[in-house]
Amino acid sequence: LIQHLCILLNFRDIDSAPPKEGQKSQVDQVRSIVAEVMDRYNTNHLEENQNLTTTTDSTIPIPTILVYESSMKNCYGLQNLHSFITLPYLAHRERELRRRAEHARRQHAQWTRELAESKVVE
Image 1 (cartoon, rainbow, N blue to C red):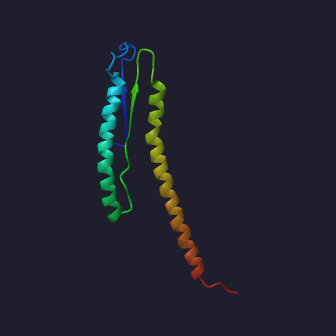
Image 2: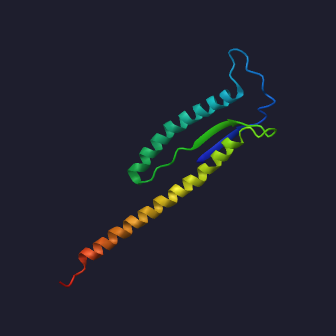
Image 3: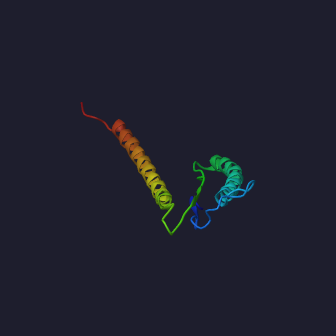
């Protein structure tokens, strides 16, 4: 499953002419296509998650799709790409911390149960 997708439209410096009246820029066209795809995906995703939650407790995450202009000539868009690259790392880190928190919760509950069940000499 794709969780994070970055679409870089390169050669920003070459295609600097503004779009003609009534036309969208290349970035706007691509963003419109991505928005349409995501709308269809979100509709299907909602149905799939409703089916999943009836059988399990997990859900399918919605992917992050971003469109940026870039230029290798003057490094335009490099900051956006750098920021985007941190998304998978942060998602992994979040999953790991949630897993560890759940483990600590279970361990805490188990130790509390064991202490409550043990006979204390008074």
